[in-house]
Length: 75
Image 1 (cartoon, one colour):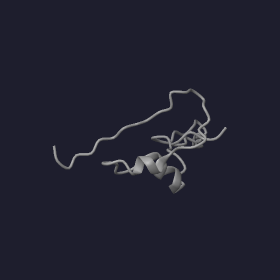
Image 2 (image 1 turned 180 degrees about the horizontal axis):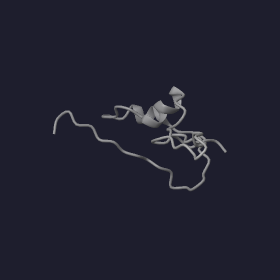
Image 3 (image 1 turned 120 degrees about the vertical axis):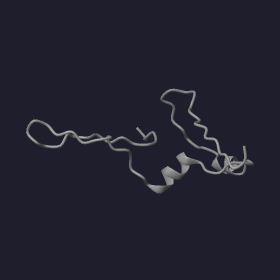
Image 4 (image 1 turned 180 degrees about the vertical axis):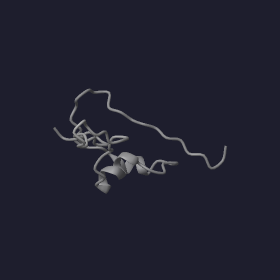
């Protein structure tokens, strides 16, 4: 079908591995590649995703929301 794009998620086969480098230029040069979302998100400085809704406690204070980074963080 013309004008259709497909998405692919590539995950590491190694649990808890430290990624030292990713060769993005070779991927960008491949025919048909439109966007590398992980690379674009990391470069844009987007923080993370928030909870779908805020819940308040019995005291009326909003819940404490921990960070939800989009990409894995150093650690």
